Every structure is written in structure tokens, then in C-alpha cells.
Amino acid sequence: MEIILLVIGPTKEKYIREGLDFYESRLKKYSKFKISTVSSENKILEFLKKGDKLIILDGKGTSYSSEGLSSQFQKWMNSGPKRLIFAIGDAYGFKSHTMVRADYTMSLGPMTYPHDLARLIFLEQLYRSWTILGGEPYHHG
Image (cartoon, rainbow, N blue to C red):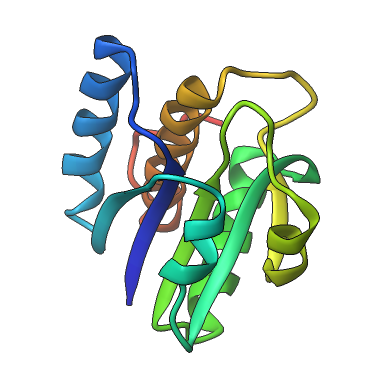
């Protein structure tokens, strides 16, 4: 199974790009992982293939503790998708036609983050999920 973080537009800030590179390299230890960029929201639906599970990150979605996310992440993986795709929109979020296609909607919590920073926060939490599932000492919760 491949895990993809699908984002709209490039990451602008150098420090965030460096953080994404850091966690991307760590995540490759656990799974086939990549960050893919599309130019617009309409391209997200074109990116999807049969058998993909699309999880949209949106402030109105379900929020989790780190342990809760790792448990849900395991359930998503066990459901057998060919690709597990996490999508983060632009500064304006997602339109209804994309939300309708989502298999699941999750939130990073009640606070609002710049969309580039949400990418980094999500990748750290995805990495943390893997370490929780593996019983590794990274997570001290």
C-alpha cells in the first residue's frame, strides 16, 4: 500500500519544506510514502484511482488524540486500499464536490493553521502514528 500526502500548490516556506523532507525520509522506513502536489482542487479528483481511500483534512472533520489517530490509521490501512491519500487544501479549504468524494474527513483540532504548516503538523502526526503502532519510544503519551 502507498501512502500519499496530496497538497494543492507548492510549499512556500523553506523551513516547512525542510520539515516535510525530514518527516518524509522518516516515513519511508515504514511504508511507501510520497508527497504529491496538484495545481488546483479540481486536479485532486483527477489524481484519484480506483481503490484509493481519500481522507480530507478539514476543520470540520473528526479530531483525534495522537493515540486515537494511530488506531484510526491502522483501521484505514486494514481496510485494504491500494493507496491511502490524505489531502490538504489551500487557504480556502475544499468545495463540496471534493468533500462528497472523501471517504473520511479529519481535523487537526479546533485551531486554524496556515495550510503549509498543517502539512508539517500532519506529517509529524503520521510519523508519530507509525511509532505508536510499532511501540517505539518516540511517543511519550
